[in-house]
Length: 210
Image (cartoon, rainbow, N blue to C red; front, side, top):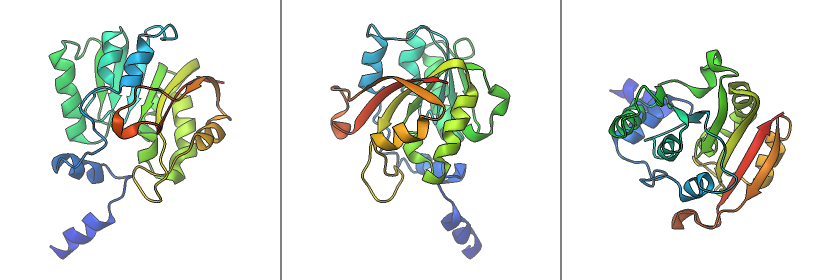
């Protein structure tokens, strides 16, 4: 019993069991139950990207995958928490897209190198601020590797001032500084239709792989 407690205490945000325990206990305050409104608005705007293959790291329960499926994208949800993958799978089934336009990888995003240069787009929402800040530069290079030449990173960034996490502190200057080495910024703006809980704390960007 004591050994099990010690193992539980040693889990970190880098471990899938840490996240799986949160899903099992239904302690997922970041999950707001539906797609993020700024992403829906972006897909209906004149700047909406042409459909292609898009990866969604840390897809969670898959809410943000659905508007991209509805817009004609081939969507791959990626998460290493089994409960998250199962919830997304059920959504893909409900819309009749599982295995045709909706795919899943129950994997660690940092360890899927067989998909390097495979995706036209990567969607970032709530995954980046959840990883340990020591891995942020690795994230930049991992995402760049997953994208085809000229591929785009679509990001809805959750800006935070908290001193601990997850979510860990994040500013727009952190984003610009970290991604400048591998990406150019095409679009960057503060959405006006964020969830009330995140109003004035989000930044939407579209970046192109250099």
